[in-house]
Image (cartoon, rainbow, N blue to C red; front, side, top):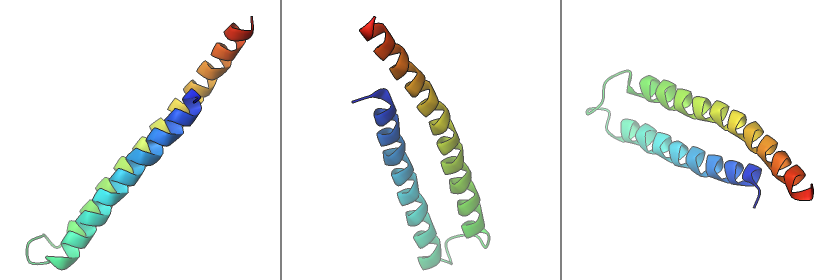
Length: 79
């Protein structure tokens, strides 16, 4: 498995986990309005959205680094 594929697989797993946490917190806030603050949904949305977006940005950078490393490994293997 190439490094690019590993990066993509790990990013999908981490993003899915974060989406699950986001889903859980959003449902918790809807089912327990007396236990959360009035701005709970907005805070959860902003926080989880920023976390997922930041991780996706880092994932793009890691993908390009992995692609470069794959090319270097292939070049050194053929030489």
